[in-house]
Every structure is written in structure tokens, then in C-alpha cells.
Image (cartoon, rainbow, N blue to C red; front, top):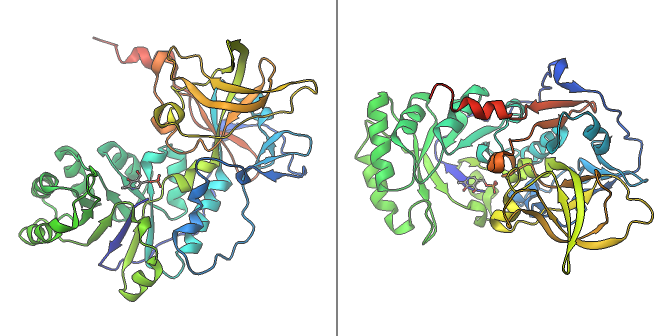
Length: 420
Ligand SMILES: Cc1ncc(COP(=O)(O)O)c(C=O)c1O
């Protein structure tokens, strides 16, 4: 996560949560079973658990002592999302695999940030790259979040989702002129990442006929992001030399989580703090739901082959991310527990979702989920092997299940060639 310290004060328009309306046609009928005793899944080791939002600011003590998590286990061994059996959702989902989110968990994560930021001039700038589902963005906007963008299309989507441009920040080390013009016209804040970026931002301001409000972006040695402290004065002077096009409003600290006394700093200098959380808002709100195609053994290795793959969820293959995997229903009593690699059907040996996982041997067709799948999973999905991007669903506060993104289809793919 990165943080901004903005030196011009802006009001804090954090709005109260608004219930989003779902068209009834998107709703699926599933019975909630919240009466079961539930054990929170978040207790288990997963790759995102270090990202509890509350850790952002050390003081004051959080008021909420009981952290509630959407994924729990019923006493009889079924995986539940907000009290709804994931197995039941699998029966009504139009296809497999799919992503399943908890809308209340998204709300809870944002509320935890708001609590941590209480009494500070601040803006929760949700990093759209983590997950760009339009319904999720609209929900986050209604909860009072701003948005952090890294491309022109993310900017267009943020505006489409209704984000206030003055609560949006355009980041990136390779922003193209066309996107910067769009940003200047929309009036979003822009980061200055390098000398050439500064040139492009000034050019964009001239083309758009609007003054740009930039941050000077600091970065670590050898990082492709931002500028080093030694060069800061040069950039401050360069910005001053372009008074007509630019009005400097702050500093952007890439990986600002190294600043530990944020609250004190912000209050003592009367600053406006913009934080840029992505995964801590959305990762733990979702699981990727699959069917088991079969189980096989080659040499000494056991494999569970599922219908989901690196095409839909690439983090394990791409950078060895560990995401907790489990079955959605209790296995048959005689199921032997073994060590498995959980792999997809894609023709690529890097196609795995988990390695060396202790799991009960699943039956053909059993449900299997990959947890912490809300961030950098669907937003990084591809159509490799023509596995089209999967549908997404969420469970609402009342336990109802709605589709929040259609599955891509083969016809969608053929459309790229129409008329050629
Ligand atoms: C500048 C910047 N802002 C925000 C983010 C979002 O980070 P995270 O999803 O880890 O919260 C990143 C992560 O790469 C980043 O580089």
C-alpha cells in the first residue's frame, strides 16, 4: 500500500454505507444456514492475512474487538459464506468455475479503515487494479472510498462507477499522454514519477487547458517507481517553473507503510492523508469456486485436477502466492487424506493453484475453493487456452446471491474478428 501526504486540506466526505440495489433477475435463490456454529476461516494461514486494515495506523485502539469474517465452517463441515452453503451456491451458479464474494465483508473491511482513520483528514483511495468489478467499485464508492488508478481505462471505469474525480489519483511510471489528457480534463490528482512523466503531465495540462494537481512521487533505490530523495529538490523547482500548468499538492510515498507514526504526523502538520489499499479491502472477501474433475497419481505425486486454472487465477503460478484451499463439503467418511498438488486443465506445467496441500481425497465433482481470491485474481485473469473469464457472484447482507459479472463467452471472442 502506498500513502499520500497531501499538503492542501480537503474536506473528508466519507459517506455512510448505502445498500446497493440488485436487479431481481440477477438474484439466485439459496437458503441461508446461519444457525450453524461457525469457525472463522481467517484464523488459518493465508497469504493476505498480514493485511488486516486495522494495522495501518497504530493508534487509537480499534473499537471493534470481534473481527467477523465471511467464510466460516458449519458444525457438520460445510463451507459457508455469510451463513450460506457454498455448495448450494454451486448448484445455482450458471457455470464453473466462478468467483464468490461477500458484499458485507467488503463493507466491514472499509469500516475498519474508517475506524482507523477516525478524526483524520483522509481519503481511502481504493486501488482499482486489485479488482475492477463495476458492482464492487460502485459499492466502494457508496461507502465513501476514492479511487487509485494506473491507466486511462481504470480512470474511465472509476468515472463510470461515479467516483468523485477529486478523490481519485492517477499513479504509474509509464503514464501515456492520451491518458494524462483524460486525467487533466477529469481533474484527478496525478503523480509525477520521473522527468519524462513531468514533461508529459505539463503537455497534457496544455492540451486539456487545465491545471494539473500533482504529487511528487518518491521511490526506493533501484525501484522502477518514483524518484529518489536526492532528486526531490530538482523536481520541486521544475514544478515551480510550470506554475501555469501545475499546482503541487503533496508527496506520494511508494510503500508508505514504512512510516509508522502516521496519525501523529498527519495531525501535527494538519495534512490530508490519502491511503491506497487494494488487497486489504478486497482479497479476503472472495473465494474462487471450482469442481473437481478427477484425482490422479504420477510417480510419487498426487494431483487433484479442477476445472479452474492459472487462466482464471494466476497468482500461485506467477509469483508463488500461497492461497488456502479446501473442499466445500465434508468428504466421505472413508476418504484418505493425502498430499496433493491442485492443478488446472491448462496445457502448461506452471498451471497450479496450490502445491503440497493436505486434503481429504475428493470425489469426482466435489466443490473446492481457493481462498483470498478477491485481489489480483479476476483482474489478472486471461483467456489462455480459450478458457473464458468466469462469472462473479456476491452474497448480500440478507443472504441473497446475485450475479455481479457475466461470464465471457466464446461468441465474445469471435466478435474480435468480425468484419476483418
Ligand atoms: C502505488 C500503489 N498503490 C496502491 C497499491 C495497492 O497495493 P495493495 O493491493 O497491496 O494494497 C500498490 C501495489 O502495488 C501500489 O504500487
